[in-house]
Structure formats: C-alpha cells, structure tokens
Length: 455
Image (cartoon, rainbow, N blue to C red; front, side, top):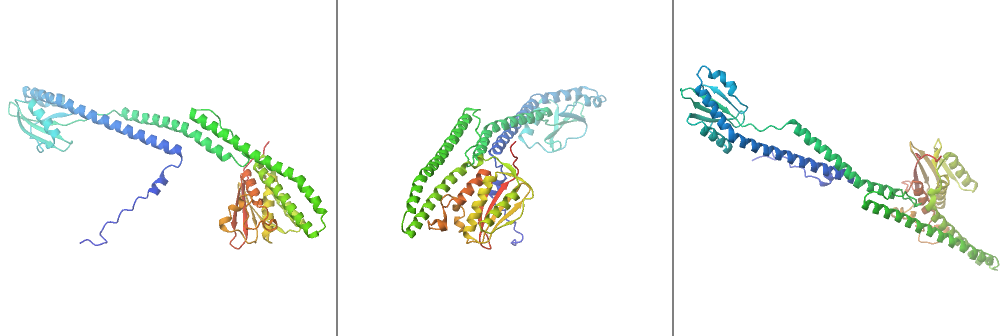
C-alpha cells in the first residue's frame, strides 16, 4: 500500500481571475489578439489540409505507377547478363525504390493496411517472377524489402518506400507573409473601430467642471459621426444648463440685495437692542449664504483663469502673514524652492478655504509644502476633532455639514470645502481629506507642475 509520501501531489486549481489578468486590458489589444490568433489557426488548418491532400495524392500516384516501374526495372535486370547487372543498378534507382543483387529480404510481413496494399500492388505487377519474401522494416518508416528470384536463379532485393510529396519552402514563407498581411489589416481595422472610442474617452476626461472640453471631429463612418455629434451636443447642453444655474444664482443674489438692505435699515430703527442684534445676525447669515452660493457656482468656470509662472513661496508667505495680521496663527512648513506654473487666484482661494476650515475647528494649523520632481503637494493640517470616516467624501459636497445644527457660527454654510474641491478639479489637481492618526484633519492638495505657461 503506498504511503502518503509516495502519492503524487494534487494539481493546483486553475485560477480564472489569474488568467484574466494575463489578457490585455484595452479593447484594441484584445480584439487585435483575437483576430490574429484566429488568422493563425486558420492558416495552420489550411497548411494541414494542404499537407493531407498532397499526401493522399502522392499515395494514389504511388499506387498507380510505382509497381509498373519496379516490375519494368526487374525485367530489365533479368534480361541483362549477370556481369552487367551491377552497373545498371544506379541507373534504375529512383527516389522511392532501389535494387540490391543477392542476399535475402529482412523484416516482418506488412501489418498496416497501407503497407499491405502497397506490397500487394508490387507483387501483382512483378508476375511471373517468383516472390521469395516480402518484409516490412522500420527504417525508413514503413519501407518494404521484396526478394525476387530471377530466371537464372539469382535474387534481387527491391527496397521500396513511401515518399511524401515535398512542400516547397516558399509555400511556408508565403503563408507567413499572408498571415503578416492579414494581421496588419486586422490591426488597422481594429484601430479604425477603437480609435473613436479612445477619442470619446479622452474628450470625456477633459470635460472638467468648467464644461469647456474639446469638440470631437464629426467625421469618419456614419456611426462614429453620429456618436461625435451626440457627444458635442451633450457638452453644449450641459454647459448651457450650468451657465443658466450661475445666472439664476447671480440674479437671486442681486435681487436679494435690495430687500436685505431695507431690512438692515429697518433693523437699525428698532428700539430693542437684543432683537436688533438677532435680526442683524440673520441678515448677515442670509447675505453670506447667497454670496457663497454664487461663488460656488462660479468656481465651475475656474479653468478660465490662465495659468502663469509664480513664486509659490512668496504666495504662501503672504497668506500666512495675512492671517497673522488678523490675529490667527498659521505655521508654514517647507518650500517649493522654485517658481511653479499654476492658476494663482484659484490656488489662493483653495488654500484660504482649507485654512479657514482648519481654524474653525482647531488651534494648531499648519501649511505643509512638499515639492517633488513634477508635482507639488500642499497639506493643511489641524488638531481639531476631525471628521467621521464615513463622511469624508460627503463634506466635499455643497451645503453639506457634519453637524446637524444649521447654526452658521458653528457649522458654516457648507460651501467652503465644496468650493475648494471644485476649484481643485478645475485646476486638474486632487483634493483629499483624511483624519490624522495623532488627531485632527489633513486636507492634502496634489497638483502637477509640468504645465507650461501660455505665450
């Protein structure tokens, strides 16, 4: 009984997910690979069919004429004087048979139908010569040795073998060239199909918050032109909707200025100081809410500000100095060390909103600057209570506040982080919030510095 150590180890199961990871990821690569593999299989099947058909044709040819050729050669040897037979062997030899004088045939009786049919045809063609023995040998494969006794009693050994019809080398080269031509055509066809999809994806990626993406060229096949035309129309509709929203908010803000001003004047005429302060507080909150709502809507057009080369260190130092002048303590850590290309007004607004939010909930606020080869990382950190992990993404939405209170003194309008997030996307930057392990919140802004300023 075999022990457990002698048993073969079980085969590891095939992981379908691992096989899928080996496949190309792009549609272009996958379709091209499928077509090229299909063409290669088709070429292989064609080559196999050609070889098989040529083999059948060669066997038919051998079965039709080779037995008569061998019989004729044996008859010639029989009529020649014994002394001259040796000199004629080379003349009578062919690619698929030859003759040897004397000796005896080797091998065993033919055991395959093809060999038996081949031997029977040769034996029948050589009558009335006596066939002493028919043997099949293995080298070359399925070769026959037929011992024939001539009229003078001497023996001749016929070495006959099957010879496949050769395939010229140029045929293989032709098949490879055909496969290459078909692969190039398949590559071009797949590229023609997938290139509009790539252009559509690029245009969708470039459609930022400013809604001023590139217009797709409406050319090519009918389906491509239809998709490009629909995408361009969609861009225009979305841009129109957003512009209309900005106009509505601006109109609301403008129209509310007059009633708010009248209410302030009437508030100043009130006798009760307590009621007057409450009304003023509500009016200030109303005015700030409308102003920040319009500001948020206008951040959708933040990319309209042209990028330029600025001294980022001077910008950060001036912002920190402004907070010190207003009685707020903000520490600056790190330097860029060289000018960068960015949109300065949008960058200032983002950092201002992040620092204001940090000062609202923390006392130790720092602006950390870390410059890398082709990007700049700015982090605003504080020692506040942080944000629940399940709400880190929600606070970047407009009018969302962590606390349930609608008191602006504690919760704000819920637009500061949303405006910073919109401006970051308009600049092509990334704004991420995370809770610090030691406590507090970190707002990390990552932006590229590879852009070139306009001429």
